[in-house]
Image 1 (cartoon, rainbow, N blue to C red):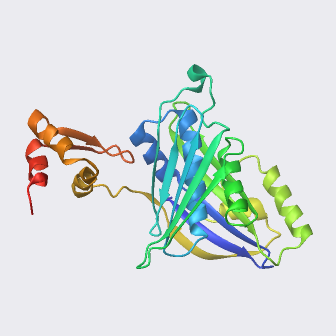
Image 2: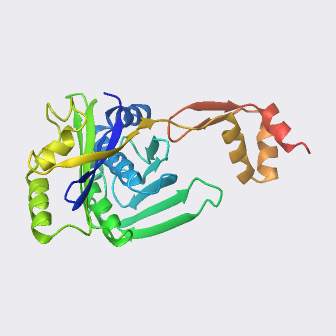
Image 3: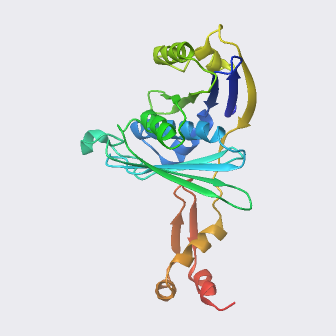
Length: 287
């Protein structure tokens, strides 16, 4: 199945649920950046979780999240868009915690979030929370509790084969609505805690299988929305050239005088661009 996100509400009005199947998106990002399995696991969970959180926001809202920490992998970043596009990067995709003696994601750092409306006013909301444990799910739940003031329970799982190839990636997000009572909440939290794996024959073949895994057959629900999800990068030559605007004129002149082409690699998709001295020289000419 192609990647997707589904949103549902229990008929009691007590809970909103979001499920994601993101196998192809996570796999593509992992392959492009050549991530080793421990790094891919952390990054994949962040990508799945960010995509589900974005689905709970305004229709035209873009959601970006960065975890800056003291672990071996360095910064993790995921960028999700209203049209279902998702991308991201890891500072050190080949980090080996066994060599560095540090976990992939450290327990000291900050979680930075930016939400922006992709409309004319382009309103931007930003927040920062402290890293609480280095566990990706913990960081996402803490962000939702502290910054969004929404009690949220989240699960994400990445399944690999023996070679580290991503076989499946998905997740479940549950939010408590005002109609929920204490008994409802206690029961659903219990079911989430007892769910040892999201990867089952039903969840990999039935679109609403993740809902049924958590709600069983005794909590009725209605699917209210469906979204596509796809790894995509919007880098191109124009954006690469635009990035040169951050350089001083003297720096650009030095590149031209050296006569060497400039190699630029996109941090998201690993696409390679070569900018010749003639192109740089043209940028220096008055319009």
